[in-house]
Image (cartoon, rainbow over all chains, first blue to last red; front, side, top):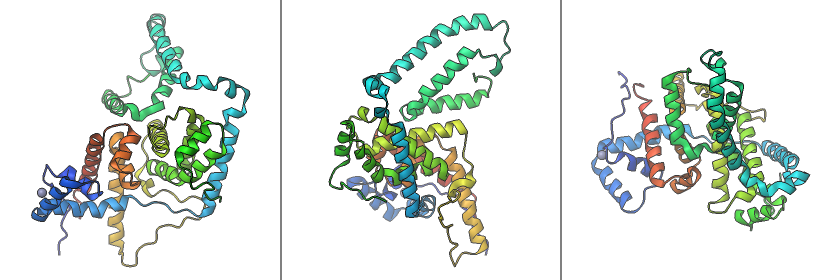
Length: 178
Length: 193
Ligand SMILES: [Zn+2]
């Protein structure tokens, strides 16, 4: 008997998102009732739901570890915590009140430095440099590295923006990299 | 391994103790949350060592910033947020993870490989491998927001409000990300026998 190739049939457009939530048990009240009512009558949506039940559990297999793994993990982390506890060093205690201000302040400082450095360094370096990565002045590269660091502090905060930037970067190739 | 010595204390109480300088309270938070923390990092990296390093780094950061935790969210969603940020940043710096690592390589702690089911034939095993490869590749290709929402729901079982809290976005946005992720993963299986 010839095997049938899998080609996902679309569920009803208005229901697909609800069915995903329904699959995960995140559908409640009238939305759930509506989904269940619809599923009784719609084979495409029933098929869609059944498919989710076949491949999604394949992807999530929690790992089981022996107790010794967790003992080592916990022991190692406690050592790291003890070694890195800023409250155990003289400066950590004295300047801990500054910590909440440190990142925004440094971030702002970097932006000011970048704003000041860009036109200045561009005039100095442009006549000598080659285009592309090698031509980027050391100061700019350092500032860029630092901005990179600040950008990484909270990626979730600006995911949409970062994704748009990454797409643009991919479209433009590597030429735009500092 | 120590058991939770203060099971009656809530996470918020332990956080308050940490903020008063009682470091032992943080050890208890570690005991309570290390398994989930590690698992989340593993979901993102598929690598046992990297998962350990990143999840431990998240605890270190949480500890060093404990005074900035304002209690508006649960401690664990705050911690997960730190882990996800570290994992996304790690992923961004090192590039994509190869699909072969979907199941990870076993650590040196004696974890057993998945046994093949008695009923599975070589054909079925090859098919299962193909399905996993496609899903793994599709998962890696998802935008970060979709991948994050998907992993937290599908792999970690967090609720939509919890994910919204971790991602600091609305529940509606999480629903959209989750739906798009699932649709893309399903689409990746097109053409399989
Ligand atoms: Zn339908």
